[in-house]
Structures are given as C-alpha cells and as structure tokens.
Image (cartoon, rainbow, N blue to C red; front, side):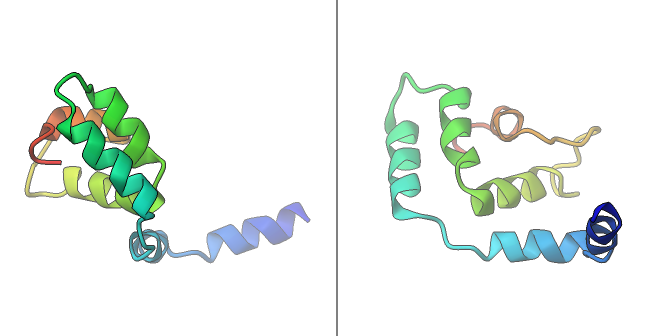
Length: 92
C-alpha cells in the first residue's frame, strides 16, 4: 500500500495540482466573512488569514501571488497570514 501511494504522489505534477486548486470556486459564505473582516477596522491580519485559509483556492492564489517575481521577496512565503502582512490589507 505504501509503495502504491508513493508512486501516485510521484506522478503528480505540482504546478498542475496548484492550478486545479485555483480553479475551484470560492464559497459565498467564505467571501462574506472575508469582506466583513476587511471592513472591520479592528480586524487583524490573523483574522483575515483564518478566513482566507478556509478556502483552498484563495489560499493558493494568494501564496502564488506573494511568491511571484512581481513582489520579489527574498524568501519564500508559505503562510497566508504572513502573505497578508507582507502585502497589506489593501493589496489583499
């Protein structure tokens, strides 16, 4: 069984998998919570990060964006909350 799982994982193209996740639709309930959090002047990056992290598509898109050459950060960002802090509430 272990060998079978390893062969399956080795056969997956990571870029293709991320692209598929990004095509998933975002649930309206998640968007509602995100918009409410952004509108709340007392909300923190951690609050917003929790809501975005609840959606795989948004999380993958945000992490792909923050790690793109456009922003050119010197290290890889692998946390949704860190991405929000690096980009800022307005940009996200």
